[in-house]
Image 1 (cartoon, rainbow, N blue to C red):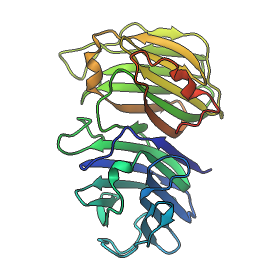
Image 2: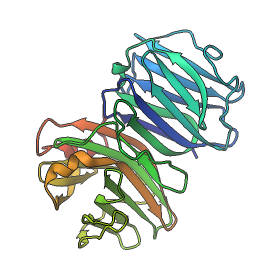
Image 3: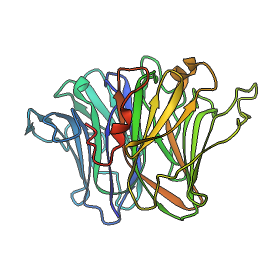
Length: 324
């Protein structure tokens, strides 16, 4: 079974940022492609196109400029001569935006550089397509001049999904998750936002298929940074999720609360338990699966509503909404 990922970035892209993509290709894979593009749908500008071509054991680098592809590179500026991604195996791809070029490593080994043919500030979207079985991680981080998030975690197939952002959250920001749950009908998935480099969860959403309910909570501060305490669970009534069906879930960051919408409707509001100054310490989105549930994330999109209450943001989650 194939999967893909398509999302709007929390931009703008600048020098000193890192994209970390990890996943697993299918057995007998022919092609795997990663694009950093100006927009999600039918872009005319793609500053970086990576095409992993398994049969020829090459990885082509190219750019789409004003709707026209340039000359692809396979050996130019290469550090490793062949494609290190093996069909059916896990892979980890890092793309660093340098002063004049992309620096690309694969499976923690330098692979190549690729000179910019377009300004990287044009990059607003990322796509991962082709013979991909699972995607574990699509992190967009800042390494320079100051790292963000503060903790750059390693992600494996057993540690859930990670979607870091290169800058802090703010009032008026919305992110939308597009996913498909499958597997054990008694399973659970959890979405959480942590504070800084700690494990303190400032938003914890537990979607429990066995009980057909959703539990929301957060953790208190603690002198022991490894022993945060849970507040009282809040149960949210109604269960807008079904196995093997796509959902769109949005979290709106308002002045006083997280507001969550699913598939076109407001689902619940969770008031902040502390002053909203904590928002600028939130790290990226994390998702974990339990008891045999699998969650296929096909997109994470970021939007600025320009308002403190994010009015109308639930429209982003309508099943027919194009998130461009």
